[in-house]
Length: 190
Image 1 (spheres, rainbow, N blue to C red):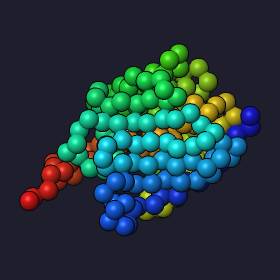
Image 2: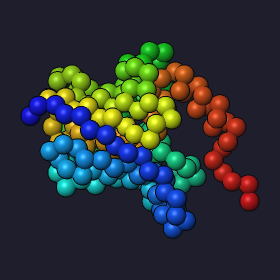
Image 3: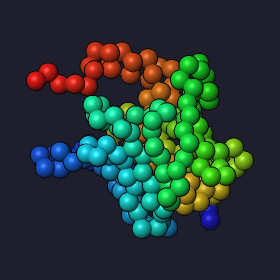
């Protein structure tokens, strides 16, 4: 299949009933795979991919205290097409490539890295770059470029990762995130 590009539109829930259930919703039409929706839920704390033409995918974390995108660490659970993945990340690395999220899904070894400013990429060890995600700051749209070598499983993985907290991919994002999480520990004063 040849490569293609599409856009996901961010929609933050505004109705109170919807706000209790979902933190963020991304929707778009992924070329031959049809309509796709990534929903980051509050309860349960999980991001799910809904798409008729793609395998089901989800990423979750057992921490119920945090809000927002799903945390990525050794307790994070990621599955694509019913197959669980093993995640790893070296948050102490100084380079972008070393800070990427390592993903082992059956016989495939992926790395999700920050490739440029406001641009991330899903790479396979053997096949190279598969999906490039561009999200300009303060934009409500996410541009997704799918390379010719990518298949449905690769795209499902890249899309569900949009519901994960990817701030650790660069040293700058990690430092800012660390300061903000120190100042706001995620627990409301009641």
